[in-house]
Image 1 (cartoon, rainbow, N blue to C red):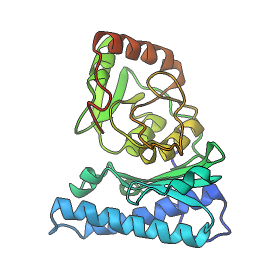
Image 2 (cartoon, rainbow, N blue to C red):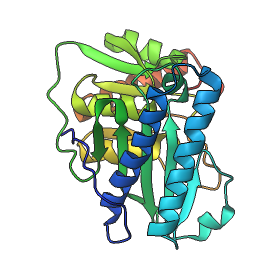
Image 3 (cartoon, rainbow, N blue to C red):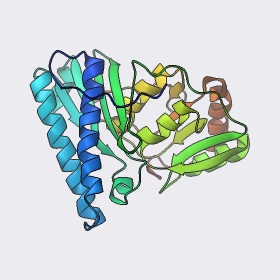
Image 4 (spheres, rainbow, N blue to C red):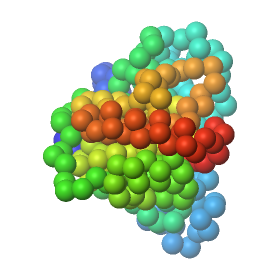
Length: 269
């Protein structure tokens, strides 16, 4: 289900799915080159430069390929006109800035298209793995391995994840980037990705497209479907897991919330 990098020119002739993949790949190439050349740079400036270069590339290419569409990005001011638009590209130019700055591989580029109320296309580029995953060719998630494994934030694993893991007897696997963790579920490297307490629409839109195409369960932690292109783009929690595990995990989440209530936003990605 993992697709190798494709290559090819970016143009208005591409379908939305093809464009999402080409944009994510192109931005990923820029970022990987920057990371390779960054052995003398400080981590803070490197992350900021990566965000800037990727944002500039994606903005330019979207303006050229889809001039009538709107964009919601982590690295650009929010334009309220998107709320009246039929098509909005939701992008994260560099998901996992810390991992990128540290020279790690678990960072990603997210490009998704929201159209008339639904996510219509999306791609997650994993540049250090030479992979681009899309909603077009994801296929089915890989077969599970022995024992449950749950991907959590490498820097700040939410407390609820620890409680859920204890209840369902799952091993916690720290990873960076939301896109990287979601793709790890799709590839079978882990079985569950659970996050609570601090994300935005650009963190999860493209990963959700890939996860759904792979036949995975995707929801908020209360079991509801995540909604996109909202007035407030804050979308703090996410569950991606193998479908046969969803009822068990959601029940464990409900138990954990009853036993250990916390304020929204207490933990983060």
